[in-house]
Length: 285
Image 1 (tube, one colour):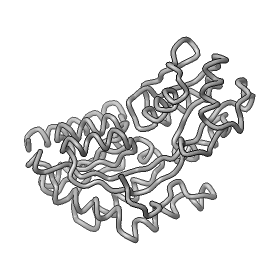
Image 2 (tube, one colour; image 1 turned 90 degrees about the vertical axis):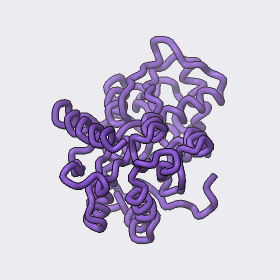
Image 3 (cartoon, helix red, strand yellow; image 1 turned 120 degrees about the vertical axis):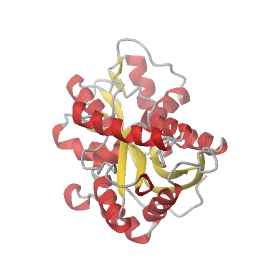
């Protein structure tokens, strides 16, 4: 496992250098440290794209004298990495998949870190005439009227939520009006803007890129749009070689009062509102 772990770190660095892939360039590789001083974090692209993670990782590395390797992928892919024991800790937003992950014993601890709301976006011309309607009505009418819809189609938390809404309205999306990008949130938003299409997005990434997008908010309310982010430590009993000691420190770090206060203020100065909200305080299931 330790050899595989080192190879994984080296491959992630090579991909970053050669292709500019999603693992963040701000992240210290950790290779210069011993493996025991390297934390491998798999996280959703929305947290990475928002810029929040850069500050949190830097503070964590400084506080604990370690290196952190961040792999920014969709939540589905991050959870698969956890199931293989290839990473130490996860920061994801796919509740149903997370519950299955925990039930199968892949995770040890799981806690709600922050929340915000998905936002449903579309062109200013609103060709489906759905602005202001509940998101379920938006989806139903867009399918009926065959107006262009962009899907990440990457197994991410956002994609899973989109599929849940389609299922709720009894629609199996297909055809030329339904475009699959297979890419992260940022790239998918750019495609939606270029194609003047509708898209479901996490709010943080949308606000970060809003100035460069020709999209407006179509629907922003309702329980269907609640978006919760959790931290999960990979179970050391299942995978003895994971760096559980550092994973547990990162877990506690994210839940600490100082970090929670920082999260609650992040984005206010630049966007006029926080990109993420603290947990409500209720038990998370």
